[in-house]
Length: 196
Image (cartoon, rainbow, N blue to C red; front, side, top):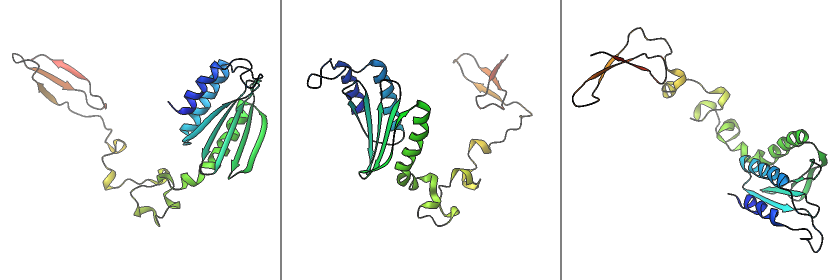
C-alpha cells in the first residue's frame, strides 16, 4: 500500500476541531474517491503521491515528478479543483470541475507532465537514438512487421481446420490404456475418449 493510501485512511480519525479548534472531519465517501485518484496517479507513473486534509472537510491529492506538481482538490459539493505547476510556475488552474471535466483536463495535464519520460519508452522508438526503424528490435506498435524472428507469435499460427485427428496414448493407470482424440483447431484442444 502506498504511503498516501495509508495516510488517507488516517484522515477518517480526524475529529471536529482537529485544526487549532476548527476543522471538519473527512467523509468516508470523499476518502473513497480520493483513493481512486491516488491509484490513478500511481497507474499513470507518478511515484510520489501525497494527500492532505482540508479544514472544511475537503481532500487534496498531490502528485510530484521531476519538477511537475499536479494537485487535485476534492470539494464537498462533488466538484474538483485542478492545479498543475512546472518548476514552481503555474501551468493550469481551474475550480468547479465536474468529474468529466477533470478527466479531460487530467489526461491532458498528466500527459504534459509525463511527456519527457514517455519519449524515452519503447513505444516511441523514432524519438530515441534509433536512427532507422529496422535497426531496433523494438518497433512502434503500429509499424511492427512480421519477420523470421517473430514467426512464433500466436497470430502467425495457421488457423485452418485440421483434416485428420491425431490419436494419442495416455497411460492413466498401470493396468489400462486410454486412447484420446484431439479435435484440433482450438488453443485448448478438447479430447474425446475412444473405446480401446
